[in-house]
Length: 133
Image (cartoon, rainbow, N blue to C red):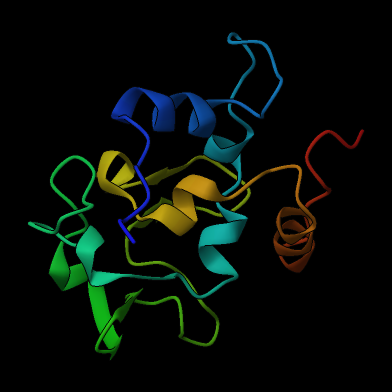
């Protein structure tokens, strides 16, 4: 069985920059949030690390990860109490940025602002769900 095809860099950027189904000009709610980066563990296959087979834009720098198992690494800081990804800069709920945005791992690329996990992460930080008035 072959590995699944990964999206092109352009595809990943579109998904990450706007909620699915939203207009291309819609603001990215993630740049004023960051709650998911400070709420969950981020585990992924080492093939996404710098130099790996499935790395985007050069891959996740190894120094920002910790090994979990032979085929699993974790973003540094995401298993701390409280969790906070080492690549996150800024204040959760204010202006935030990912230091490795173009190379971020698949769990970060696939995180959906319309999923319950987003609402839970935001609630942990005293923020309303995306789209709530």
